[in-house]
Length: 466
Ligand SMILES: *Cc1c(COP(=O)(O)O)cnc(C)c1O
Ligand SMILES: [Zn+2]
Image 1: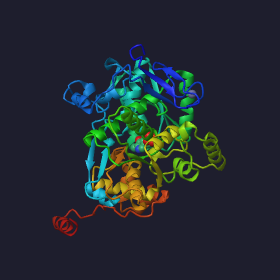
Image 2: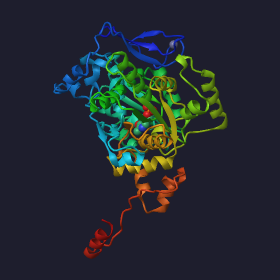
Image 3: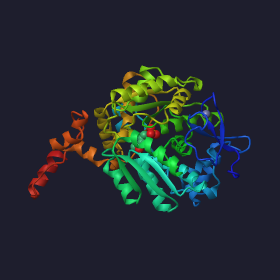
Image 4: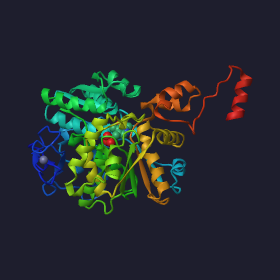
């Protein structure tokens, strides 16, 4: 962009490190195939010198860019001019301190915070990144935008297209792999929805092909601009904590866009002198989709200054293919075989002294019920963060006195089937939705009470159970 000569794209591989103009539409380095970062020349564009400067935007929120919980931090990712930005008021989210859930995790009073990204306009954190990628798509004049999705990316893209009418959405989803809450959004927002036989990874491979062939703008998290917007989740967490970094950020890991964005955010804030200490990062896989956990903990894959072991990764994927191993978890948003941001996440884990764990569907559903009864609830994938924090607490990796922030990535209503199945008295329905996934019991189920439509019976029920 002539408007933003201080921003550019850069290959993350230190062996290559080639740079590209901000106006180019790329999802990988054309020279070596690695992922790209958006970078800034901070000598040419003055970064904010204090949080006060950023806080000042909040008092000017009659400007939609300052109202946005993403764009009021835009001086920390200045690749677009104000006129170029497309915003729908995303990022109005809340950091809630909760002792009820904190007790479940095993933390001292006052130490657990939940970051509710389900409060975004399409109901998940994806809007933080979508507004950023969508703005870039708008800058380069895209007419159509596409994604492969387990549901929330497609809901978000479809919403930005329907509200702004700037582009048409093309959505690739795996068959039978999307919850009704998310599918209903894509359909209602009028997106062209292609349900292909296969799972997310199959859809991802196809959408890469198709977007390249047809020149359609790709908004999956391989898109480096998406991650710039997702950095703002951490800016808001810091803001809510009066700019004092917590000890831990715990986040579910699917395609690893969030964890990668969070790592980049903290590395940059430290470089700019806006923070002096970087929180530790915990990335939590679902047991049925544990590629990162396997590679990181079992095979000891590390960032290694950018010289990570590519053969190890490729060999692991090859074995997955040969054995027909397929991701399977009811946390559908993180049901991923080959996380597209794996290498960026390795860098984040290095920069944030990170750890990786996996939790099973039973642990996820139990944790989810706790987030519901002690907070505003979340979808299954989001609860992996709380289940993971509990596990790390039990291991002694997280101390009871540590300040912990769990990221709740998606809204409770995204996947009502899983929630109702957990609380139901209908054993068949429980088995169909949860039992088939290895969930054996619903320890924290809140059963609906069947009662005759008689005043006396109703009064008795309230006295008995209330
Ligand atoms: C997309 C998504 C995730 C996974 O995030 P990544 O950045 O791909 O790791 C987790 N939870 C929900 C609700 C999601 O929509
Ligand atoms: Zn490269």
